[in-house]
Length: 413
Ligand SMILES: Cc1ncc(COP(=O)(O)O)c(C=O)c1O
Image 1: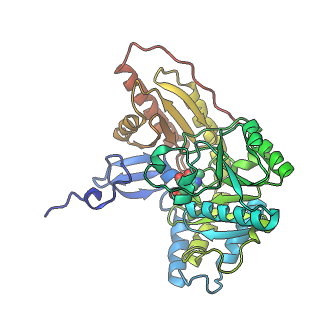
Image 2: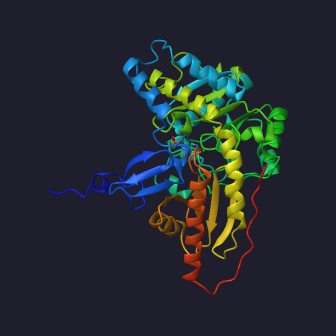
Image 3: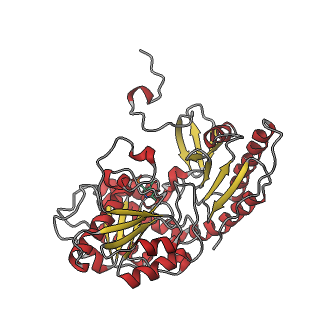
């Protein structure tokens, strides 16, 4: 029987990919099986911030794979220490717990907060405050506090112990704090919700509130961290230090799942041997690649690049006057463009961009996410943005009798 080559007949239907079959990637470029080249404006949800097939990452990957890959954490290995030390120095925190996927890092933070609540704060039934519209992964506990019905439908019963408040609303967070509150767990910018940038001062306000009420501030920087917003970590835009931070995605250099929960010593010390772990977490292959990813970000100036090219990208997007573009939000090389659904769904818009050789991604039904690898050149970025404008003009022409709706402004720190 001849095969179409698509995974669809043999795969769970938990994704609905755009109609392109990719075969190769290098830097900001991806090629399909017919050899057609695309610009990657999505970076695998920021996992490929360093670009595809970064030569330094590939060299470290193959060298370490030949040397020692997965001995388990039943033994020490000579790559984990330097990696975790680098994470602590970069974040300004004291200790790290290595995991693999982002959702596992979030689960780790939740376990730390609960045990800290029980053992340090003396709370019998700890509660964690989260934000409406959050996205922290897909495990059963994590979807238990999602406000997205699609993520939860049919997967109950859910894990208790969470309370959601509106994102970016300090007064609501303050009002929700109770004696049993042990932590606030939020994304500094909500990526999957459509690149939602909170009001300036919100994170700093949460920091003060957490200090006043002896609550842990835990930030999910799995998508926002490691340069994406034009700072190593988004919390640096507000000059604060969280009690714990979750990292993932770009930490794996675009080749491996590598994540970590990094925290103050008092928080991390709630973990004792046997209380948490992962067969693959902290393996020397992941640690060597993770450390190299941090070195590449620093030595190639990718944080600075995200800041300057990101400002250029957002300036260009905000300058567009189109009735089909309702809003542009973002920070650094990370933008959400809200498409008026009367002109096109975000998905249809992404298909149009795909035809023009630009790969992007729809989040929810109306937002097109633009988050290229941080190594992108200005010319490639401008090429992709030219195609974006072209696609807007096309959807406008298909529905010409509309009026211009004022655009929401972005928040730039
Ligand atoms: C902010 C945030 N947290 C957690 C996750 C989950 O990461 P993973 O898919 O690696 O489990 C994601 C993934 O998109 C994310 O954006």
